Length: 298
Image (cartoon, rainbow, N blue to C red; front, side):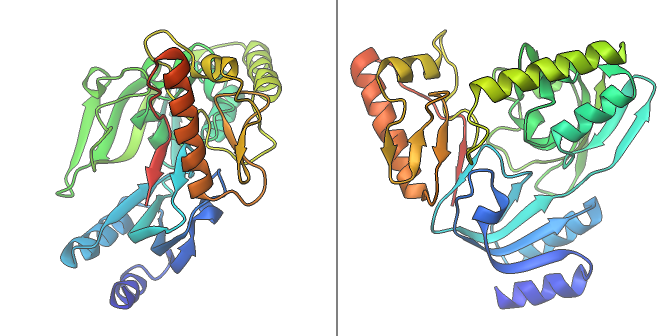
């Protein structure tokens, strides 16, 4: 890995490249052991360089955005972790071309300032555009499938492709990118003209709901489980009497039972044991198999 590190430093001199970087610094859960090498790339040329060097040495690559919706194991991540910091934004009338690394609150605020409606639902989601497309992120009645026109991505052979909305095969918290090694580069989204005061009011309303109903004061990774077959995980978990249940510093939130929060120095082991306990309890009492919405890395 020392050779890989030196090679990366030589070929991408201006990039942030770190050895044995603790991943708790880069995840919203504030949990996770070290990545062998951590790299932040700002453009596709830097990304291709990292991927080429990794392929030459048969090194595993893991790509992340803003580190939300993730649980990194205490043992860390082997190989190279690449943070996609693609932050370009171009607005043309009602269309926005946006890089995969742009944070959703930033994008939503920019849309509001330009009098564009359609992103209000995303104003409080703490992820990035790339992650939001990959999992068809949504809230308060809106989803990314409603606004995506096309997405450009890089495949494993380092070839660029652009696909239409329909080709994403969007579903609930799902897209064609799930389970692949394709890397989203940017996307075109289509919004509509709106009155700024109405857009602002809707964003403020959503923000208030989030503050009232979600544990935003503690590190977390968002909803732990997917809604499925008409049931709402938080409601079932609550009915099982699990609000406030903890293993170590990992707690089922008192505010929203669909969230697990880190109240101090929770480890991935704490969280995984708590997930197992929740699943087994729900299965025993309701016969429901809870499916993870968060991704586990490491």
